[in-house]
Image 1: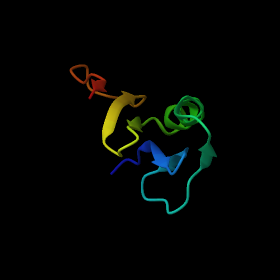
Image 2: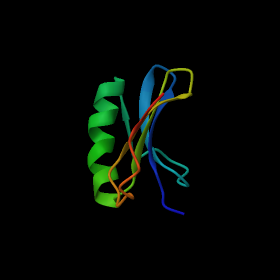
Image 3: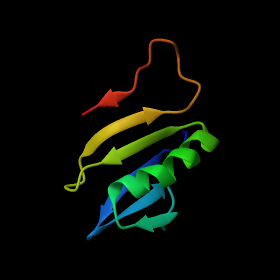
Image 4: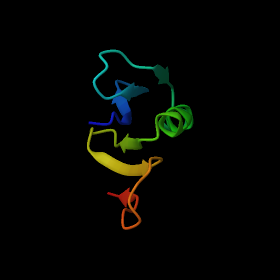
Length: 76
């Protein structure tokens, strides 16, 4: 299974986490900063960047992998 990069709330901050890892790759004051930090990681790993809402639910997914032609990014 390919690991995903997640932007998740952590109190008043935002963490960038790779699925399966215990610790955050980085912590940011804004969601935008966390997304900007997580995107190159997802591109390097050729996987999805999964962006969560403040309540933890998925807001958006951007794919940077080798997806089939019929696959599209998801907006939640």
